[in-house]
Image (cartoon, rainbow, N blue to C red; front, side, top):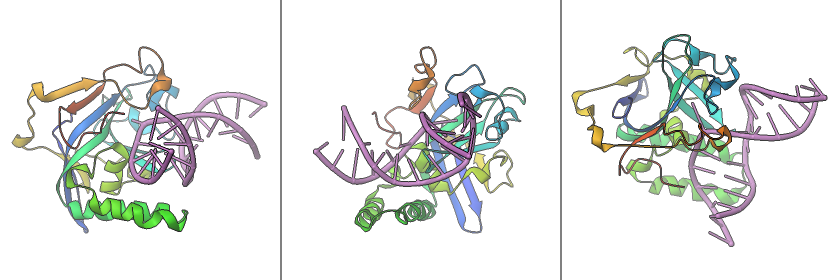
Length: 206
DNA sequence: ACAACGATCAACT
DNA sequence: GTTGATCGTTGTC
C-alpha cells in the first residue's frame, strides 16, 4: 500500500515532499473502470510494464493525474494518487498550481482571473494536494513524465519511505472509487479507494 | 475523418 | 445540487 509513503520531486528548482494520504487501485482488462480495459494502447502501455513507474494522463482536458504502476510486468495495473499532505517545498507547489491557473486564464475572460488567484493564496497548506488533479499540479507533472522510475533514488520524481511513514492499519478507511460510475455493477462499487480516516488532506465527500 | 467522453475542480444557485 | 472549462484517447464510420 502506498498510503503514508512520501512522494518527492527534487531537481534544480528545489525539493518538494508530500505524504500520500489517499489512493485508488485500478486493475487490468477485467476492471471496467481501468484504462487497461481496452487492452494495451499507446497511452496506457506503461501499465503493463514493470511496477514502480509513473503513469500520468490528462483527464477532462485539463488535469494531470499521477499513477504508480503495480503488479508484475505483463499484468497491467496502477494506483492513482488522489491526495497528498505537503511536507516540504509547499512554495514550489503553490507556484506550479498558480502556473496551472495562469494557463487556464489565458483562454478565459478577465472576470475570473483574480478570483482564482486570490483563492489559491487563501488555500490552506493541507488542502494544496487535496485531489488527484491538484497532486499533479503541485508536482508539476504532465503525461511526458510517464515512464519515470519512481523507485530510483536518482529520479527527480520518486517515492521515499521513512520509519515515520508506518500507518496503523486501524487508521485506514476503505470505500468505492470516485468518478467511475460508467464501470457498472460489480466494478463501480468495488471498495478499492483507500485513505487515512479523518485526514484533512483527503478529498471531501461529494 | 469525426464525434463522444472522461480516474476533475471551482463557481455557481 | 448543478454546470462549465477544455483536449487527448478511443471507438465508429
